[in-house]
Length: 455
Ligand SMILES: [Zn+2]
Image (spheres, rainbow, N blue to C red):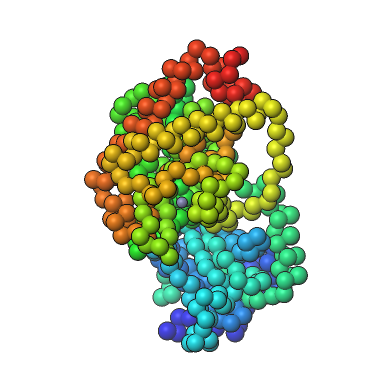
C-alpha cells in the first residue's frame, strides 16, 4: 500500500527519479500549456503498460502508468469538452479499458452518485494511430497539469509515468488551453500523413470494379460502447471484416476498410477515404446501447439529414459524432461550405441513393437478423456527410439488450447477417453500376459532376 505516495514532495522524488534537467524544469513551475518532456526511451523495444490507475483527491488527481520502460510524453489541456491529454509513443495497453472513475478518497461515503465529483469525470486510453497512443482525462472542473514525468518503476523494474492535476481557476484554465492551441496548429497528422504501406488505409488501386468502403466505427483510444465486457470497436471490426471477406470472395466489387485493426481514425478521415477511393457506397458499422430501455433491440439503418427523424436518432448522432472528442481531437467549427447549385444537386442525388440503399439493406437484413421497431431513421451524422458518396450507418443491434448482445458475439449470427449485408451491397452496386455506366463521367470527377449527370 505504500506504493501510493501523496503529493508532498514531488521535486524531491523527481530529483531521485529523473535527470536534473527535467527536475529543474518542474521545479521552476510548469504551466499546463507547455508540452512536458519526460524521459527519452532508451530502446526501441515494444512498450507495454501493465497497469493504469487513477487516484482522486478533492482538488487533485493522479494518473499512474506502469510501463516496461521510460517514454517521451507530452501533456496539455483542451476545452469543449474540457480535457487533459497525455500523448505517448505507441503503447500496448495490457489492461482492460476503465469502466468507472474512482471518486475522491476523502469523501467517498454519502456522495450523490449522479453528480461528478473530483477533477476527473472519466478517462480513457489507447492507440491513436501508427506509433501513437494517448490518455485522455475528461475534466469536471478547471485543472492545471502540475506534473507529468517518468520515474523508476517499482522493485527497480520498468518505469512509472506519473501525471498530476490540480484544481485551478477558470481563467487560468482558459489561458492554458489557448496557449496549447497556439502551439498545436496543424499538429494532428492522423493517418493521412502517416499512411501504413500495404494496408487499405490508402485508396484502392483502380481495378475498374465499383468500390465500397466499409467503416468499422471507433477504434484505438475510442472504444465506443462497452457493456458487460462487449466492446463496440471490437465487435464492429469483426463484423466489417466478415462483410469484406464475403465481398472479396464474390469478386465483383473492390472493398476498402477504413481501419483493419484497433486503431483510431478521425471521422473526417473516414469521409476523405471514401471520396478519394472513388467509392460508390460507404457503410459505417456500429452497435448501439440504451441502458434505460433494455427491451429496445434490433438493427437500424441511418442516413444523414439536417433534421433528425426522431429524438432517438438525434441522440445517437450526437453520441457517434463525439468520436473525435473521445480521442482528444481539438474540434473547432469548420468554415461554412460554399454551396453551389451543382453541389446541392449532387448532395440531393447522393441522399436519394443513400435512402435506396438503406431500404435495400433492411430488406436483406431481415432475412437473417432482427430489425428495430423503427428501422430506418436519419440524423446529422458527420461520418455520412460525403456530398458525393451514398452513405449509411448500420447499427447492428443494442448491446444493452441481452438477446442482441448474445447475437452480436455469436460467430453464426455474424456469418449469417454479414452475408446478407454483403448481398445487399452487391445488389445495390451492380444495379447502380449498370444504370450509370453509359452516362457517368470518369471516376474521380465526382467533385465537379453529380453522380449520374450527363457530361
Ligand atoms: Zn458507435
